[in-house]
Length: 97
View (cartoon, rainbow, N blue to C red):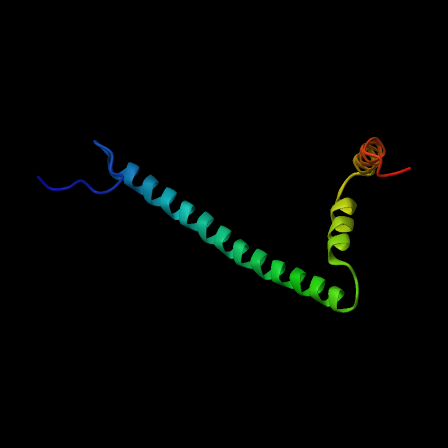
């Protein structure tokens, strides 16, 4: 008994096969686009790493810079709320007099 073609459905006609080929082509297209974007992302991540290294070489504190970048991405209300909670927790722990 011959093996059925992979992903072949029982009773699949020519129209179904064309749809499957079309779906496979679309899937391949999506995967290839994602792979290209992942390559671009890796390149951008390397560029960002270089900028941080350059800043560190100039004497800036990279950890603090990363915090600033993260804070700047936040909405002002969310940032203010986080700062207030941090202050509250530090006071509760006696870290701020």
